[in-house]
Length: 119
Image 1 (cartoon, rainbow, N blue to C red):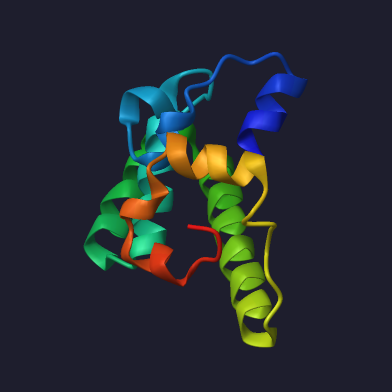
Image 2 (cartoon, rainbow, N blue to C red):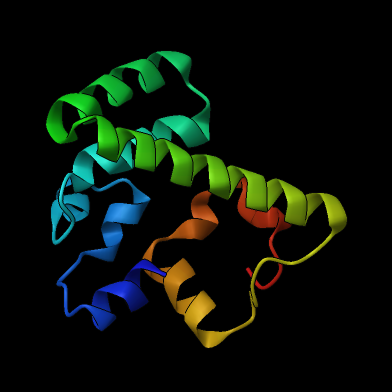
């Protein structure tokens, strides 16, 4: 989604930012590094990291960006849980775009990749 959005708006981004590269996250995305670190702390459920990344995002971007980021993170958590609980695949894991993104971001390194079709 980020790649398509960036192409639509003619924004130069570094897709590696999704995989934890802070320099990549900052390219073309305002507060990109702070947003990436906040998202990582939400995903890993690390309470201490969440406190510090939330404060860093608040200092850098302000309360509105923090609230929006928390809302987006909560929505993604909700969508994934609903899809998982009722057995809906969330994307076409066999598509060429899906394979390309998994390869570029080295997503097969994650333990959960063994549960994903097409890896």
